Image (cartoon, rainbow, N blue to C red):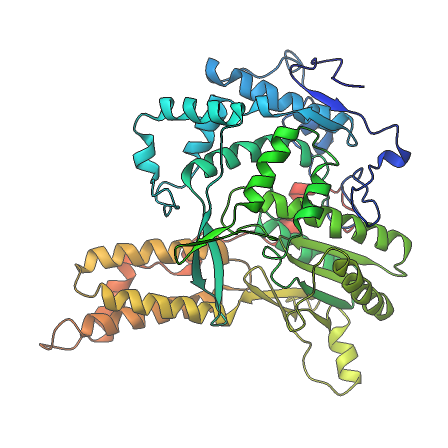
Length: 530
């Protein structure tokens, strides 16, 4: 049945999937169908209900419903945003009511107001694409430009520009290819992302944390730590997909999108962004696979692709095949899974290789590892005459088996040493270039850099490594200052006093709470992992 009875076909139009078995839609490909109707997997990762729907916060926190005018819709800040907010809210509610529904009318939600909001959400100082337009240049006469862009999008005259290819160094010495998208393409993509997020946030599973609203890297780290500590996990499978963003299959990508999106205009836009290719050394290279890293649409497309390829399959495998306990956390293309039984771990690894191969993906042979880890790892390795338990890296931290002061097992986490050394190397290079600037200017720059670094890395158990990071910064700064003049040497007493003015001690800065504390507050005891 076309159209929603509540909002009308002019506002939301979708086709229900309840006529098909289990709400599944057949994939238009040579391979088997992928089922779209799934919900958050509470036993793997807790489900966090959104707070923008009626009474959702009260249900999450297990408290009584609010009284008075709580049922009235929230007022918009400006009249110009009313249609945007109410329209996307209606899409979100319809997607939540029927998670098998196909939406046939979505492009009309991409309004001038939404384009304007997307423009101001972009980074001001981002690099320019092939169009050469900067954010501040485009802001001049913004309303007229956005109206023209809106007209091109809705009339079908909009054409995506190729992505400018750049390379950034990685910690291992290699280079990561990134794409710099043209400014107008960024604006349209960011607007479409907001529309699609209203739909797919109702489908994504709880184990997915990357590039999602209300979820971040530390949420994934907390879920992983609590899962390992509160379950009988003995084995860890550290999964890394080789060149994931560069090997996404376009045919499968469009097939997955069609499970929920039936608006041909939106699908055509996404297809153009996938096929537009890159501009490298003055030559346009058409894209036959992959999605450019750096484009606003890429993170969402990656999540959708892995939702159907991996997340749904992982949940099904855990329910039907696993003999013991199993946990899973995924952030973008990096995943960590925990198993109680070794036969489950080995069987899952083999099955995952077969599963990914069906969708033209492969595991990185060097970065994908299976290792003993958990509360029994020390005892198991001691019986075998082996050394300390192995470690694994996830989201910037090295995870290792440790003990709390009371002797109980806990997951220790410290900053990855290789990445910290790479950061220090870059700081030394910048200090050498800026050694002739005034001392207060350099001090303020180092203060911002160090505080920003600690904002992410200052977690319980990592203070000693941050202290070492601070000492190396001071040492590098002293070395740069001593090269400014040959008149005298800068002794350590003066240097320590100078550093104290700008670079605080880590213990003076705010620390992230313990994982079990923050995890418990956010889940309110709803997770079966605990």
